[in-house]
Amino acid sequence: MSIDIKENKSYAIIGKSGSGKSSLAKILMKINENYKGDISFDNGDFRDFSELEIYSLIYYIPQNPIVFNMNLLENIVLGSSDYDRNEVLDIIKKVDLDYLLSQKKDEKLDSNSLSGGEKKKLEIARAIYKNDKLIIFDEPQTGLDPKSSQTIDNLIFSMDDITRIVITHKQDCDYLNKFDRIINIEDYK
Image (cartoon, rainbow, N blue to C red; front, side, top):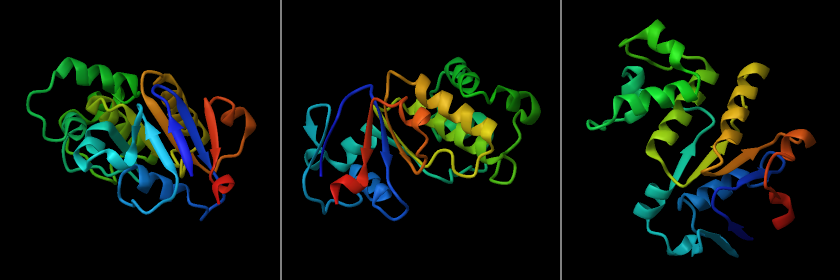
């Protein structure tokens, strides 16, 4: 497998269930370094990046995001004490979670207090706040109603200053045509 990932582009990784889409994410996150071929990003080979460099370069959004027992702002900044409150409020508005500020205020959140779409928006807010160069979305539409799915898609495609890799089973042509490149994982077997 040889893939050259360009900055500020969007990639759809498609393939049947069990075809290796999530394995590619593990390779990018250096969880699995046993692969053949070359994967490069920003003119660098992924094999040459340290784990620390990967952590500061890539944000991974899982299918089932975690909600910590903290309020909304704390769930986004995750332990950072020197954050700019206005910046975080702008991010909350960008991901369409600002209504939670009035509903939940400083209330502690948990997995049961947010819907699947809200959890994914929260994870996207964390990614925007962390300001990494590359975000991997693992099946971002899984378990979402059509409206929430569309909101998440709109967020993904509005982030044109970040490289986005979307692992998806969604084969809809209109959806896939929005990406700069489509990588069918089965072509590399």
